[in-house]
Image (cartoon, rainbow, N blue to C red; front, side, top):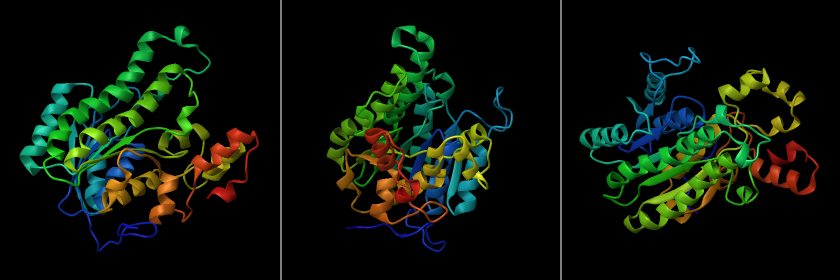
Length: 317
């Protein structure tokens, strides 16, 4: 089996296997996408990070929200080159201008991470499809599906110029897990669609030596999740008092290391079209979360849902 440069937590500070490579992380303001951008930078890549929240255009609903400039600074501090570009990925002209800029400045694109989401505030459980506010439902699909295919439409012509490029469709749940209905209706569609998009791109872009996969993190301790549980990263285990399954949670760095493992694997094409999870890739590539553990929430929740009894989290980390 071909393995990437690192076998444990972080890549070596003196080893930059993605030096000379160019990545685009769409929607890299916060959470898993920000961590992915930083980890790609740690491996030496030039990383374009996009979003709508900037130093000059802060969020009205969350004035303390992180910005794309901050993400770019973290990428550079980690050892790469971070480049912040304002882009609304629902606006085709903005995405086209973004990829034209990458083409002009770099001449190629090696890694695309379609991570745009931002629809959590639109999710309402307990409503049938016909009871759901249609405007909210359509916006969920615009954010979770339309942003992804608009970005791929403009980015792929840069990526198929030479073999070896990688497209990662970030989603929630593997193909196997998402065979179950994930209510509400619009969320189910939004999170299954990237799996199908990866399969389709695996066929179409695969002809040019480009690999496309879908990837899911587990129960990520993003800033928003930590706030919801009323904990910090330092005392996150206190959240298990509210929800015992929180013991299976992971930092955003875990999925970031999964993306970097794929991007630095010379035989990544064997995954073309596959639905992957960070937990399963940790076992294959040998990376860990920041605490040295290797949580496998997909296997944990599969067992939980099939038996109705919560297993011991220690057996799945």
